[in-house]
Image (cartoon, rainbow, N blue to C red; front, top):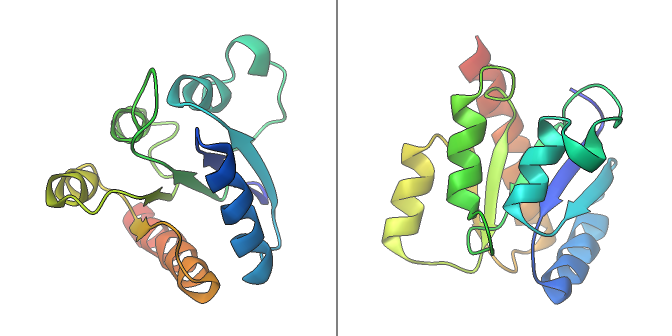
Length: 139
């Protein structure tokens, strides 16, 4: 895995807040921000405008649930169904507190779930836990 994280969020204000929280938490990786699930999948699969992106996958993906075109849960399903992508740690970072979304996230093997906006230390701990969980899943 490369030393960058992919952050998929359609709300510009939430992007700004989360980037600030990551900075406060001592994030050491480059953050690539995309604003919808369709772009995220094209990026991960190196399709279209992302066909010439650098090799490798992000250390972790922060993914909103409620997005236009392709929801975060659909993106998570596609990641887990793709053998080349399935090992990437995924944290759902969302405003949804709905039990059905939380259950669906974990049924789809999310590595973490955080309600926006988390405290910087909580976000850092969730990301680190997700990376560790993914490492255990890989064996």
